[in-house]
Image (cartoon, rainbow, N blue to C red; front, side, top):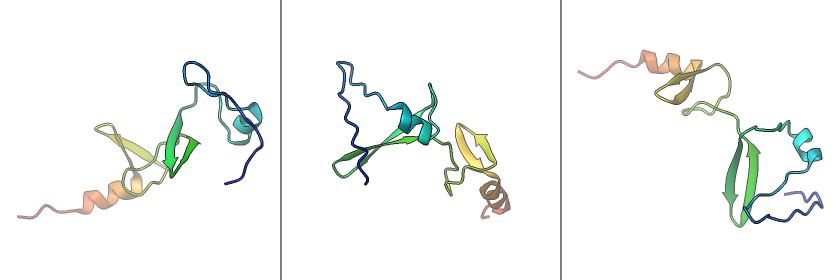
Length: 84
């Protein structure tokens, strides 16, 4: 992991401001959703991008029962025949 040299304090509500330079670099705009991950002893922030629940693709997504499925996985699922 590369250090940016930028230090921010957590405010009384638990918020941290992400510097504009980093928001611009990663295409994060006001109101964009951010995912929070834990990696060992590190907290990782990542711009949220919806993806297929099966393969992780972010292209050509369809929604079914509040889940996202890409066209390729949807086609594969439609080929499955139920057992008799």
